[in-house]
Image (tube, rainbow, N blue to C red; front, side, top):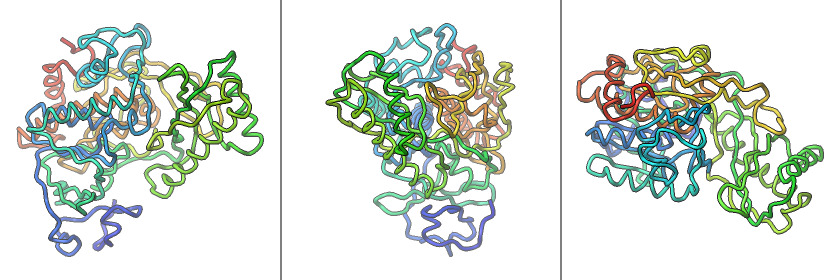
Length: 456
């Protein structure tokens, strides 16, 4: 993106759209010299599924690591949205585990499976308590405290560039603005914020998948045809003008016998735009409450129910994607194309949510389910920025391919791989773009991670 010669303080702080690149040569004129600075080997921006795995992996591989996360906890969509599924960990055909490493570790330490599990009872197992997952994530991060520093309630809000290198990442928190100077940066923001601000090329579809607010309702009695009656009630609420859009709904007794967990909110919007994201959060809460009210009024079993909570954040499926060294395409996924630099295995179906009502399900077209497929290292490497890797749903793919690779455990695998690459780049004094992806794959294999065919 073009870099103007001057930027306002609000733009520098990332409070308005289009902000956050400060060329290094202009730093004296643009940025306050008394901002404190922190030096580290590897900086992980975002503590979601990809960022949590990346931070653990980088620290365990010996690098001085810092994790920056806007929430007060790690876990991303699992904890910040409330989705308990470990999507992408196992083949739908036979339950064969295709992601080990940090992803399998988190599932096993959540009490769902054995640490060395090779097969699971379901391809998308769930954890029983998202609050317990927050505690587990904290415990694992604290265990790496000799190498790892964590800053919660801290938002990445800009970069300072030195030619094609990120000289510093700006972070805003209760201390004000701080420069973090890292030898290697991993963008796990989900929206490719750091990559875009640093000038790496990105892509964003003219249409984006809708956002979803997950929520829970307590004191619900199981009754015949509950899901069917919930669907009928939403159809009526929509006809009355009380609910503009929805899907499913997915109504599940997930956490307790008298409590339902709901997938159903569907809000169009661009979550990389702060105005749009604010509107979507407000609309999501309104829609969730409209669903609850309709069910309490019209559905047997909801007479004495109450609204427990919604996720702290609305869930985002799609915004920017980097245009990296390789753009993973849906035809490569469906053909299970092999890559010498494969660093992870994906297995989720092409899961595009449309911006319209779909009753009884989430998708408007028949599912396309690939066999487990390779994800190449080059899809984590952006163009035009020397010391940056990108992991999670914003890595380099086509829009359809991203609808498969965006899920929780696949993101964990990408974060772990990006961290291994970042550490190798630090140790070798080189850039991620100059690394041989086969070397990253070899290192992952040594720690029982990487693509499924490499498991020892």
